Image (tube, rainbow, N blue to C red; front, side):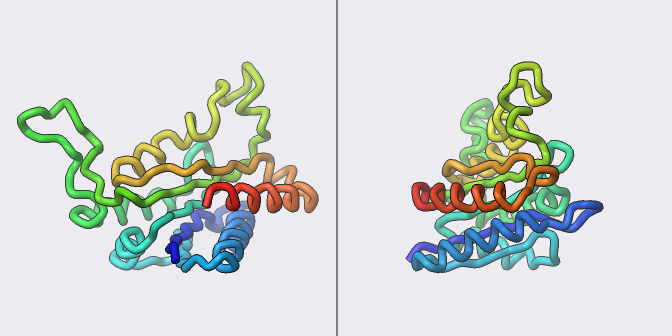
Length: 196
């Protein structure tokens, strides 16, 4: 049986209630449980035990992050969670930055201890998809993975995780009609069937 850690990066802040990321977490947990996976869930918007979360990373075969994007970054509590867990996970999640004193310019970022494990990230946006694809729009033609989430992916690579294709949900805040959400649910289930 594969073990999956779901990290819900949604949180309540100003007009955001974290509802869509709660929905994504429910969709994911339901799909995985129905298909025989063992599941643990962490909500970074709530209190967490850093030592337990380090153990969760070591336990999991697959880690799935669900995050909204606020001001072109992951939310502050998700960033704090990653900072806490990875920094305090030295010796368990990573052993070093991978370099040696004899050759300090090479192998930076190769000291991760989570090799063989995989991760996936979903992101939810108020921005429409056109903001990423239409020439001259704000994202310069970069996808979320090549733009806003690039540093996130490098951090996961640093600790040894291998990326699975994620999924991005656009225009959720202003355009989150029941029809759009249902279409996203169906597309996401198909995505999980193909990826996991």
